[in-house]
Image 1 (cartoon, helix red, strand yellow):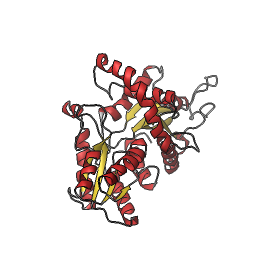
Image 2 (image 1 turned 60 degrees about the horizontal axis):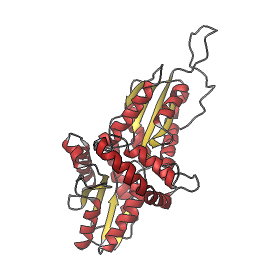
Image 3 (image 1 turned 90 degrees about the vertical axis):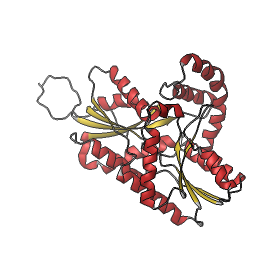
Image 4 (image 1 turned 30 degrees about the horizontal axis):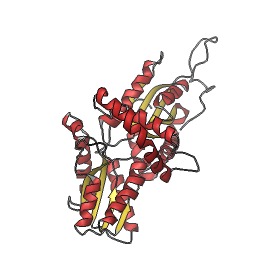
Length: 352
């Protein structure tokens, strides 16, 4: 969580009496999620979308082709539409997107759970796109005396467009530092036992509270263009392994627990099967009761709350479905914190 940065006591040392005051000896943990706009108005959305869609990891189309499309079409038409979508899920009490609210809470609760380490451990959080930025929070951790920092991209499955771009911006930040902290990037946890158990328990808990039994359960992951998979991105394989382990943990076969991919963008082929088409097809085939989980998201956001909980629920009902339920992400609840804590404690090995 964010803590006051100046005037923190330095770790004990044998420095000369006239040595300048400097904070050292601490270890930092930085939780990083995708990002959220600062507000829902046109210009806030435009700034956020421009930063996101200008990332070469996210959009691999050559600049000469992509730049006119981005600046001439997308950034003219998309901010208004996406702003309305964000406004429908906005945390008005804090005036921020839910992803920011949840990620902050994850950091605060993780710090509480790891309190036995004491002041030597500092937990913070950042957004890859938007605010607070990764560079700003790495600088803040360094100013608090963190000589070693664990960066945790909050993506269970690795993709170049998610995990790798967090590493890119983190190491870019180090380029501007004279005194660089040692940096670790936490690996993905798509097959971690704590994670699989938490997803299975979350699903079971929601199913027990429903007034219906679903005929099918869809596990929807964020999609990426198929060309990224063809170039060697392991994302699809990580999602597939998560699904295999989740089916083993729940006892559900491939006919009851389906893997799909959502949020495709543009005309290129993305990873299949597509979530919206699968849900429509299930409804047209006679499925009346459906549950959707989103195990690739560590926190609820526009893609889970609005895209799944509203858009795809409408698709299901429009095509003949009747009862639809979205299982919330693990978020900052006990199961979600169990997963993040397990990853952090493992990856801090030898540091604390």
